[in-house]
Every structure is written in structure tokens, then in C-alpha cells.
Amino acid sequence: MRTYEVWAPSAAERVEVEVAGERHPLAVDAGRDGWWHGEAPTGDYAFRLDDGPPLPDPRSPRQPHGPDGPSRPVDHAAFRWSQTGWRGRPLPGAVLYELHIGTFTAAGTFDAAAERLDHLVELGVDFVELMPVCPFPGRHGWGYDGVSLWAVHEPYGGPEGLKRFVDAAHRKGLGVVLDVVHNHLGPSGNHLPAYGPYFTDRHHTPWGSAVNLDAPGSDEVRAYLIGSALAWLRDYRIDGLRLDAVHALADDRAVHFLEQLSGAVDTLAATSNRPLFLIAESDLNSPRTTAPREAGGQGLTAQWSDDLHHALHCALTGESQGYYGDFAREPLAAVARTLTRGFFHEGGWSSFRGRGHGRPFPPAHGHRLLGYLQTHDQIGNRALGDRISAGLPPGRVAAGAALVLTSPFTPMLFMGEEWGAATPWQYFTDHTDPGLAEAVRQGRRREFAEHGWQAEEVPDPQEPATVLRSVLDWTEPRRAPHAELLSWYRRLIRLRRERPELVDPDLAAVRVEYDEAARWLVVHRGAYRIAVNLGGFAARVPLGGAGHELLAAFGDCALDGAAVRLGADSAAVVRV
Image (cartoon, rainbow, N blue to C red; front, side, top):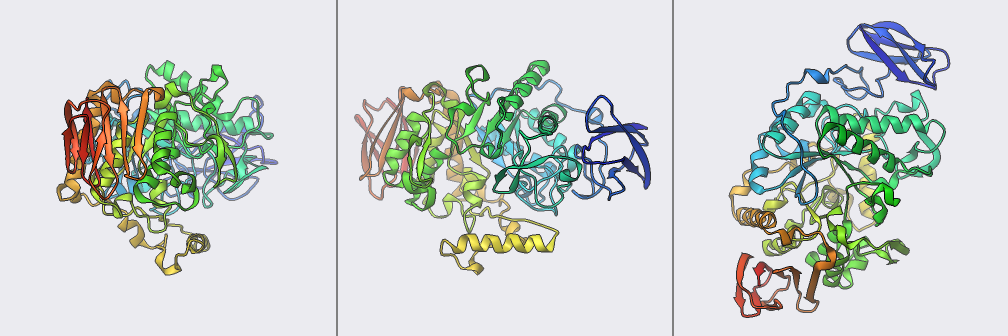
């Protein structure tokens, strides 16, 4: 026998738990409004509200038959961790590596991904950032349509598979970050509205009604989300969470949900005696996200910085459509501004938004911003899912990597970036509802038709070939030209680890010189210079002092007194 409990304020008369085809009535919990509880045998189970259909547990720890099936208990204490001595590591000074379990390997499982962890150790990264792993319909998907926020996608390996992966990563000295989605649930398999006011029409998001963080019943909804977050950190020994699109968490309460969440995580970190952290994805350009709670902030550890990505993307590719417009006017100036100020938009005009945007970022805390050349969003949300390496010479990709990996930010890579993977990373789904599948297919085509794409050119998200194209080819790192780029990434990460000035998060200590017409740029980091030539001709780039040692070079590079000579599309790290 075990105790079952559920928050179901929408139930008018009764709640039952169904185990092995037998129903067992639950009693109203007099001490907790809207809660029901009772004893029943252990086994796969579902709840019935007022004689309705069987529904999975909102706090289900496992969905062995998919999002719509019965739930299954999990005894987290039964897993035998081999790495009992792992004490974690803080985020500042680290390098992250974002990966998607389903396409990191051909098998698409936690166990198969664990077999590739030695590659990440040799690369030199510190944390693996997993894209969402909550259950979603079908086998393949990005994970942002997940439901059952306490459970793990079964095709990846379920709860045991995730624990084995985390255990293996910790054995090799790698921390694990998990991407979680609190701003919406997927359109299929979401049964929360049947239980209670998990969503509200007080606010609307791109996905419809907002998650209820400030309307009646929101105390329990907040507890549900915070409980899920703590479960990942406690039961699965995850080291940190990446919070998807926090700008879509509509909350008018005096204490914002993120502030409450960060306080709960800090408490768990103190009691478990290991560093735990939260990373936000936010397009608000607000320093409040990462400011300490005692200073009126929300207390998160770091946030993604799309501004650096946009500036670099424009400088490297010349693209200027959509939100790239403001960055593309003077792309090298945009790179310089972002590297020295954190945000490009810090209160001034944003032509893409048609209004002022952002606020100045505190210069002493560059490590609170994640910097990157590529992410799942910036690749997969392109019509063809083409990586930056698909249209650029390796030298220019190497230049972008040098600027990221020696920046005052916390660098992050996207899987396969380190060798210039030739495989795209496209938008793919496996919806089991034919109507939803067709709606997603047509919506994707309409979206890109507005940008001049023909329908047949846009990959079908539901087509199996789309996900197969997106799987990494692990023979590439051993072949030219990929091997040279991989060696460059390893060298840059090693330099970052060995030279403290390349990790210094003080934006005020960074100085950048550039020539927009000649297309060269040099970043001053203490005694080090990171020089890149993005032009089609050789350039003599001033270093502001005699070059003493050429620490790393990609392409034709040579010291020349107080300058470095760079061939077209090349990069160098120099000590002066």
C-alpha cells in the first residue's frame, strides 16, 4: 500500500485513484484546500475526477506509456549512485555545451549520449546542458512541447536513464544542466486544466492562456513548478536549471515567481552542501533577472545573451533581416559594444520592437551573461536549420569562436559546433494527433512563406527524414576540415582555463578596437589580444604593444612588431 494525494479543486464531489483497474476513493484533506489523499495498492495508477476518464498524476514521476497513459511510482532512493562524492562546481568560470539527447547520437538515448562524454572531457567543457527531457507525444521532438513536468521522456531512457547519464557525467568531472519549461505545456497530453486553475486568462502568451502565477489558486501552481524544479536538482542530482523564456512568465505579484524559485534553490543548495544555479532565457535585457534578491533582483545566477549572438552573426554572415537589423548597421561596432557593455540594447531604440529596449548591465558581472555563437534556437528556427558553418569558411567560424571563448561572458557551445558539423539541426516533431501534426506542418510553411520560401523547400517537421538529417555524424571530427576546427576549439578552451585574464568577467576591463571597412577587430584582455580578420584580404592588425608570443592561430598569422598580420578569415590569440 502507498499514499496517493492530488490537488484537484475542480472536482465537485469525489476523486478516486485507479490501480490495476480497481478504483479507490480518496478523502478530502481537511488541512489543505483542494487536496485529496488516501491509501491504495502500489502500481500503475491514474486519478478519476467525478467519474471522469482516468488522468495521469500532475506530479507523475514516470509515464511509461506516454503523456496520456497511467502514471508509475518511482523510488528515487533505490538508484545506486556510483559518484557519491560529487560536490558540484559553480557556474562562474565554466564553459557549457548544449545538447539534444535525441539527435546527439543515432540511438538518441541517455546511455548512448553517455558513451560520448569523453569527447566533451577532451574538448574541455565543464557542464553539459540538456535540452528538455519531460514526456511529449511520439518519440522525436525538441522537448518544448513537454508535459508531466516531474517525469522523463521514456524513449530517451526514462528516469533511470537520466540518472545513469548524470552519474556518468559526474564521474568524468562534468556537471549537468537541465532545460526546463515553466511558461507553457505542450498542446497534446496536458491534463492539468481538468484538475484546477493551472492556467489563467488574465494573461496571454504565444501559446494561449498563461500559466497561473498570480490569479486565485496560484500559490499551488507555484508550489507545483518549484517542486518540479527542486526534484530535478535533488532526485536526479542535476547541478543547475536553464529556464525557458522567462519573459513569458506573466506574474503581477509583489514577489515574482522567479524570486521565489531562486530562493528555494538557494535553500536546497545550502542544505545539500553543493552549488546549484538557475540560468534564464530572457529577451528583456534586464539586469534585474540576475541581480541579488536583497538588491531587488530575482536572484538568478545567469541569463542567455542573444545580443552577443546577434552581433557576431551579423559580423560573420552579413545577414540583416528581422531582429538582426540594428546589429547589422555597424556589425563590428555592435560586437565591440556588446563585449564591453554586456547588452547592445540598454534602453535605446530597437527598430525590431519599435520602441526603446533594455537597461544597462552592471559591468562587474559579465559572467552572469551566457555568450554563444550558436544555439538550438538560432539554428533550428531557420527555415532549413542550417548551421553557421554551412555558409562560412572555417576561418570565419574560428574567428567567431575565438571571440566567444575569450569573452568576459560564460561561453556556451551547441553540439557539433566545435567541429563545424555539416549536419543541419532542423525543427522536427512526432505528434500522434493527425490534426495537430498538420497544423504544425502548415504553420511552419506559412511562417517561412512570409520570408520568400516555397512550401516544398521547408522541411516537414513530421517527416522522419527531418530528424534523421539532424543527427550528428560522429565520423566528421576525424576528417578534414572538421578536425582542424575541433583542435582550435580545444586550444581556445585550454587557453581560457590556463589564463585567468581570459576569464575575467569585468566588462570595464575589456577594450576593443576595430576597422569596420577593413573588417578586422582586436579585443584587449589584460596582456592578451584576440585578433580576427573577417575580410577577404590580408590585414595588419595593431596590438597596442609588441607581440611577445603567438599563443594560438587559425589561418595565416604572423607577428609583426606591434601588430599581427592576419590572412583572410583568420584569428589569433597573442600575448603582448
